[in-house]
Amino acid sequence: MKVSLVVPTLNESGSVSELFRGLDSAAAELPSGWEFEVIVVDDGSTDGTPEIVRSLPSGFTKKVIERKERGLATAVLRGFAEAEGDVLGVIDADLSHPTHKLPELLRRLENNELVVASRNIPGGEVEEWPWYRRFMSWFATLLTRPLGIRVSDPMSGYFFLRRRVFERAEFSPLGYKILLEILVKAKVTSVAEVPYVFRNREVGKSKMGSRETVNYLRHLAKLYSWKVLG
Ligand SMILES: Nc1nc2c(ncn2[C@@H]2O[C@H](COP(=O)(O)OP(=O)(O)OP(=O)(O)O)[C@@H](O)[C@H]2O)c(=O)[nH]1
Ligand SMILES: [Mg+2]
Image (cartoon, rainbow, N blue to C red):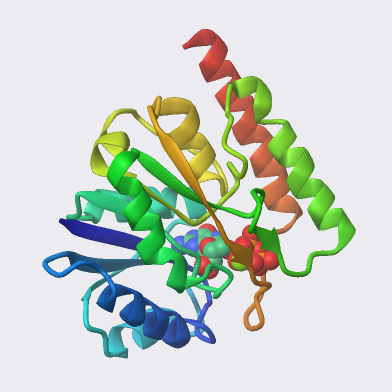
């Protein structure tokens, strides 16, 4: 079994070293015989993120892809396209997603096509978000319900899926929410959710701004019309 983990990066020089240390520990916990590769997809960082990643020691295979374009969701798809694994996954580079949950997420994939790390089930939470960000996240999730999505955290950026799910559909996401795109288009037969605590980023800057809110609404509109018109 081979696992390919995509790490999208945009100016994350302050956190990639610690992320890679966490990934090394997590990879060491995988069943023997399992292979692990990490694919960093960088969209023009100006802080040396790709160079730092290349210089980091790691006990797993590492690829660094540098793109000219921008966009979190398309960066993840590019990583999946370059991946060699039977299992594909994503994790943010800013340490918001705990690497120690990785073995549990992969275990749950044994009986499921997709496993989502969720903030919205018992045991899961966001460490500290102001009320308006909580509200935005709740409201954005509510807007996905008419699409038939029953996952508690369809906005999650931390998930794993079987390769066949990625190969089942054509994706054309806009903005950030690649999981939502996959849940709507790939007709996933079984989804498991594993709770986790989302840590606020301590270094680097957020790329989530009003532009991404507009992108999200445009993406939703596209998904609604895809659902209705086919
Ligand atoms: N390759 C690529 N990565 C991106 C892009 N935008 C964001 N990222 C990365 O995607 C991950 C999530 O972005 P964040 O800015 O942390 O967004 P967020 O988690 O919603 O918001 P905060 O944690 O509050 O900053 C991080 O690893 C970013 O470096 C992009 O356009 N291209
Ligand atoms: Mg983040």
